[in-house]
Length: 239
Image (cartoon, rainbow, N blue to C red; front, side, top):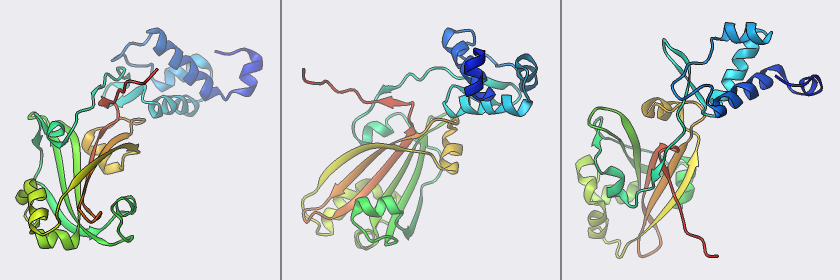
């Protein structure tokens, strides 16, 4: 796999990972192909089964392969992201709720509190949804955060009333509104990974929609999450 000099510097599992990665890049293992079993890799390259397992784990962490039950370690197809949609309605187009929406009053998570200008642990109203295809494949997670005082004043305890949140907060006396959008990313939680069936090595793309009142206070933050392989954003640059 490597020259004797290189082999002295590179761990055996990394050498195997490099070899398999190069084989995938050359097309020797195409998307959907199953890599050799660990015992076969260990025997072929003269290493312990645990060492071969470390190499496979490295490729999983890179998103190149995925463990599939009853098949083995399968080469994943290269991502083919679509253009990032614009606006909440576009995020929901063609999708359906896969489970009843949930609502609760909870302490604001740290990053949410910071973005909303709230004190750490300050109470917020949370509205959670899972959206996906009519066939049942989950594609989007949407969590809406509203300061508890605003939610109670606007009567948002009913999940069905949240479609008209802008009208509700305006009726509650918050004046003119403006929106902003932030695109970011983070690692998925265990629950998020399970719901979205994310392979190892694939993180979440997040789009944060923030609704700000006339006084500059944040009235709502909607945290959209999906596979980071789903969409891409392209911008023209000035020469």
